Length: 351
Image (cartoon, rainbow, N blue to C red):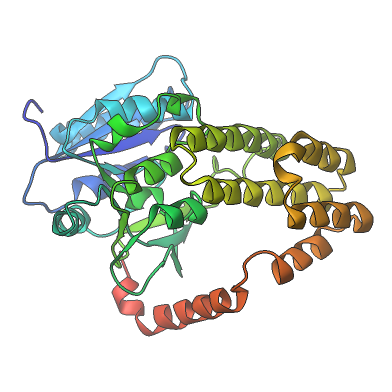
């Protein structure tokens, strides 16, 4: 553990007793020609996560690769994540959260080799296979291209946080030094890592499925009784962070960042309409009116929502006329992706 590893794998965990062993084993199974460490930060999980991690460290043949931190007080996801990233010592940092996993034992070796072929790129990612709980599906998440390519910062920003699966990310450690000083106050970290990492020379996309993306977990975004309150609070913090990022970047990506704010505004407003929350719907628009008022599509959709009180109609009109001027092209691309996956299923089989 004293020698500086080539790669550090950052794994944060909270109440992941159902998945943490799979996540850890998927990292320790990596076959590499270089050294790596696994840095696990447990944010005071009240379940059996701590017990499982300690057992693996003591019993696994490669348990010595693990640097384990248990926080005596819960710090919250963002604080835990940033603290863990800063503990990573490697030249490269890979991400794998406690409810995700890698499904290819050659992931680290292959991805680092591809990054070295593109030394100017500071971040890379790849598609993931959808898992529903423990069950593998035939759906591929984030199949953004049929070949390895470099995506521009503009494409990363407008793709949103879901463009790059978190468990697919590897970045150069120097990216951490370029993060804005206010990053610890942001509601999420991976999206801002993606943007910051792509600024130098874009983000390298590797067309190989090497991780899973798990949905329907007990502590996912969609779990809990206060989903609407959480989503409203998230939008406010998220949009404020995007505005601060625009200032940090000197307005060079103002259009792209504003697009992302609009996207999340529309998603939240449709949720309010669907649940008959007219007061909240109006308040959301008024709070963001100074920024969104000049956008004719937002203004039109707002009044359409007031008139129809229908999330379905408002969303339909939005998709038909405003979502993207090349909606047909995007639809055909989605169809071709589906055909491509079916034809090449063995290549995407994973474990």
